Image (cartoon, rainbow over the protein chains, first blue to last red):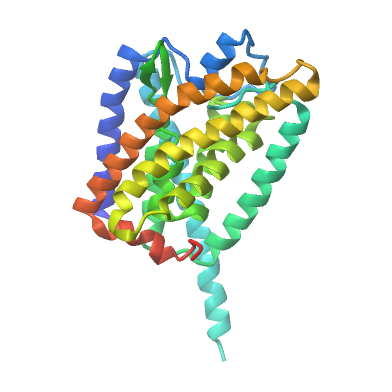
Length: 98
Length: 219
């Protein structure tokens, strides 16, 4: 488990450094699909759903948003797999019972 | 490559949901039978890492940027079914929590990035022998981005044709632009995926056996 804690800290450190580079070189530009839409003169339509959070336009907001998102993602995958594992465990117990 | 609301025609929006739900159901069924205690924290950490990596766009060319999709990385480390689940969870959280990608287009985004991305990665990766799997990870990463971009470009072109120009982008623009940009973005994906794969092979080779341990990869 200590290894995964180290990995998590490594990911946070890389993210913090990567965000500096992102805001220095990329934040002002769109990705491949956005550029394709721009060059084709296709504007973005209004969204049908308003999300509670945004990635943010400055370093600190984006850092917090990334950490919150990573935490939710970790929790969702971990929680889901733990539930599956527990159910599988109890199924095995039932199957093994005489 | 996150498709927003209102870009694709309703037929493709519906197709995206059908394919996404069918493949997620299959992947969950395959994965659930094989969940292993060792793989749980690894899958969760990998998902969190791909989430933050997707936020960091890198410049490619002519004022265009790209970001890691992570489908190939998840696939070469976990196998395609677990990878579909990981990438789908990320896309669902990006959509519902951060509004990244349209809600109506979520099915298409899952189809393009999770389903196409992971299974193209797996197909490309399996072309290489275990001895050359590092090269396999690099090729899989580039191919996953390029083919996902091709599929998205075709969806844009066919949406345009089906709707008489109301939705999508004409194929003479969507196909060369999407493929041109993503051929370069794929190089970034290949460098990052290959770098992480080679690093893990060196410092934690047992991690690369996770996809064997979960046994959810087709033989």
